[in-house]
Image 1 (tube, rainbow, N blue to C red):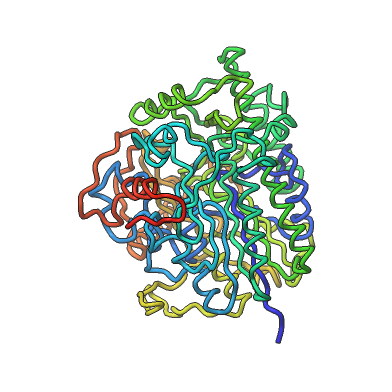
Image 2 (cartoon, rainbow, N blue to C red; image 1 turned 90 degrees about the vertical axis):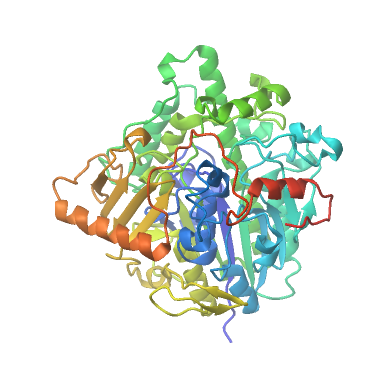
Amino acid sequence: MTKRPNFLIIVADDLGFSDIGCYGSEIQTPVLDQLASEGIRFSDYHTAAVCSPTRSMLLSGTDCHLAGLGIMSEFRTVDPERYNVPGHEGYMNHDIAALPELLQDAGYFTAMAGKWHLGYKNDFGPHSRGFDRSFAMLPGCANHFGWEPAWNKEPGGRRPAKFVPGHSAPLYTEDGARYMPTPNTESDPAKGFYSSDTYVETLMRYLDQRDGKPFFAFLPFGAPHYPLQCPKADRDKYAGLYDDGPDALRLRRLESLQKIGMVAHGTVAHPVVATTAEWETMTTEEQKMSSKAMEIFAGMVDGIDQAVGKIIDYLKRIGELDNTVIMFMSDNGAEAAAWEGNAANGPDLLKTIETYYDNSYDNLGNYNSFCWYGPRWAQASTAPGRLYKAYNTEGGIRVPLIVRYPQLSGHEPGTISHTFATCMDIMPTLLDLAGVKHPNQLSGGQKVPYRGQMVYPMRGKSWVPHLASKAPIYGEEPVGWEMFGRGAMRKGKWKINWMSKKDHGKGTWELHDLSRDPGETLDLAEQYPSKLKELVDDFDVYVKQTGTVWGLPLDMTQPRRPLPADMIGGDPIADQRAWMAVGRGERPRV
């Protein structure tokens, strides 16, 4: 019998298109660059616009609206009535068969360590979705050194005085029970907890327990998501490198992308869209703080590369490197958070930072600092794409992807594939390589039984034909996106986008030819009305097939509202409070 392949899926959090060396970055990522030189890079790989929907698609092989993440749990409170419908639970529901469940059933050892963000309830944690071993950060982000001052002041350090948007506790579980990291007040991974290092070391410890089985290892990093924090040695590598500002970096990155063949020569980048101050209008002190934030971000990416190096060395040691399918990707485009400009929800976070953190220049990046880098730096890494995370434009959904698996040799090592692909394709690809059939082989969206539930079929495509012989993956088959009332549809080289006028759009459908205009700078809707109608009709079909709630754009600046008692998926804030009220090794009744 042929030896079955192992799988290592690595996900960076909020990493932009050009943030690693083999995608044109100045950030030092020699391990990832080596993987790319031995494998394939994709220039046209797409995710959802935000993190938990992408994770649901990766682990279900289908659209996020079918998997329960039609809206992120954090944003259901902006418009509860609108999202109180199936598919918008805010966690990965049981309408899908999860990838680790199927591989577990097929005899694989399944393990994960890192960011989960797919549900707080006991029935929806990784231990309940097919992982034999799991170490999971439940919320969307947390202090990378495991420190949380506002909540540590409460009795027992267990419960928050108030839920602050953008500021989550370091809430972890191990195999479904509460894990409480010891805060690392040295800001040194060698002396305690640091997310990237702790995740990879935990995952390697789990893999030692596989007892000869093939394995599925899931390594979703929390970095480089804000708060921007990393060891001093890592950020100091980049001291002074960004002193000329984000626009200069954007130009360098774009030139580098063209030089390596990731985008075509002459590609026009979309103009920067930002409400924050331009570099030239900032004071010297403001520029100094801003460039320091970018240095920390670079240090976090550098740290991811070092952590990946540890598990690559581990695979070499156990003789499984060339029998392991390795994929490295980001979950969405770069994060452009500018909480200082969010009138409804920003003040609470800014007050928390002012009260409990030390954001002085010399301390920035340490365990007790809390910062982000904003939309201008984000668009340096999403260029030539338009906008950034949370948008279905190319800056929000086109991300890096590296695939290394020497057993499939249809491409020369180091090749760049310009074929369109999506995160829904990961699961069908892995099942294909493992020789595992999905329980639902029906077309048309009907459900079939699996593990006591009724589950949808996959919508993604296996990459095996493309990896083996360069066959196209989607061709002219349409693929849709929707998040926060923003819509998009891709079909071959054509793409349509809908965003409101208040939300960087026109309030009408725009049409772009991505083969000539990856920056989505030219709206061709008036020139090609029949093509526009064709894709809009495709989008209408997508909405019906996926149960998408399509309507007015979600106003993110509105205050959060109470959820009704019968809200589908329950109250994620109440679930977090329940977790914070239990001790190490305990489980709340959620």
